[in-house]
Length: 285
Image 1: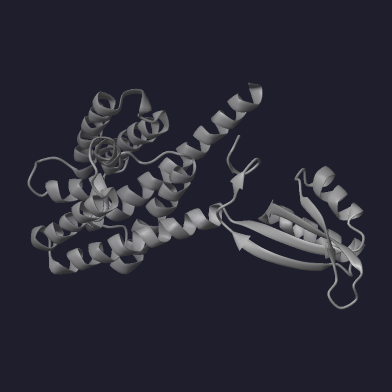
Image 2: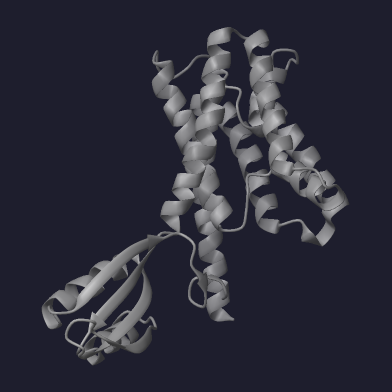
């Protein structure tokens, strides 16, 4: 139980840091430039042109309304982490508006600001998704639709985001609309790439005539396991042992260096994988 509490605390610390990164990206780069891509914040930017309220305030109101809908329609299945992130983001945006009001972009370089408006929230979203959370907003709508309809949720949300981007062309100007379209297209690519790199592991296939030191190092030093089986060399017909193991990137470097010193004749193939499901990785505690 103590271990579970420590892990839970660590996850919430990471979620808090990710939310802070999201808030910075949205408030300092997305809102001032009216980049209208991505869910509730993009919708808030467009609505702010018609309502006498700031994008931060509109984001807060919409998020709170969506949280209420989430509790009504999803009940206990509504993730507490998503609630935490959604409330923290809404409060953080409103607090920044009071602490550091902005009437213009930080720089005169819209392309540079678009990069930060895409990259910071995307990295944040990837970290949240990896921990089983999200930034709330339209993700809540997706969860409700998934439960009560047979719609293609991804397509539905993409159409909503696209509608927001198109509306930006009329509400603001064509330049802002095109910037927003670029942001919408790039955001999903960045999120996918970051998630893949977060989960990236190295798969080792080691062929050795002296496997004991290697397996001992994997078990005792790296605290991982391995699968071994006997094999025969096709040319020499000598008996060899094949060791298969999966490691995190830092562990992979340690194992490679260890084998290079202790068993230099071993044959090693190393491949990358971002989808490892099993004990010690994803899918099991």
